Amino acid sequence: MHSQILSLAFATLAVGHGIITSPTARSAGAAMEAVCGQQVTNNLQSNEYGDIQQLIQIGSSQQDFDPASCDVSLCKGLQFDDNTANIQNFTAGQVVPIKIDLQAKHTGTANVSIVDTASNTMISKQLIYFPVYASTATDIPKNQTQFNITIPDVSSQCNTAGACVVQWWWDSRESNQTYMSCIDFSMT
Image 1 (cartoon, one colour):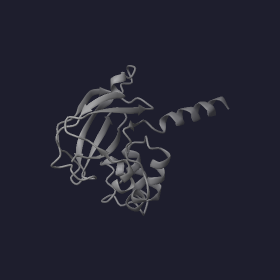
Image 2 (tube, helix red, strand yellow):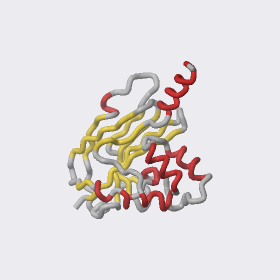
Image 3 (cartoon, helix red, strand yellow):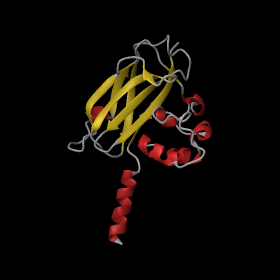
């Protein structure tokens, strides 16, 4: 019985690992289900902290998963249409406080950047970069979970909501897991 409780506690810790909690990040909904399928969407609705490798694994066995439309390498496949109520309006030079909730550590690298959603490419230099992130060898420094970014002038690329996101990206080669969260915004 004792080992079952210990196993359950470990499984609970391993369920999810990290997301942006402020500003409001993208979440799953009906538009995601239409392209990513019910099982992948259900997984993210019950565990928004999960990694993209898990989503690919789940999706690959589902008939309603369309990997061409559900690009989990962009915002975990979370769709803009499910998140239109959470669009931020940023200005060039604005300092934006970011809060991350990390539930488990896996040594890796992390960055925050602005990504063009049509091409899934960065359109400016990284806004912040952590060469060693969430190290299993140390406590997590506060500046890895609460930090500021300065929004560059991307008004020509990001003047329409949905064209760009602020993306937090954490890649752990130690665990072969990648986590991300996206904040929808426009700049006018």
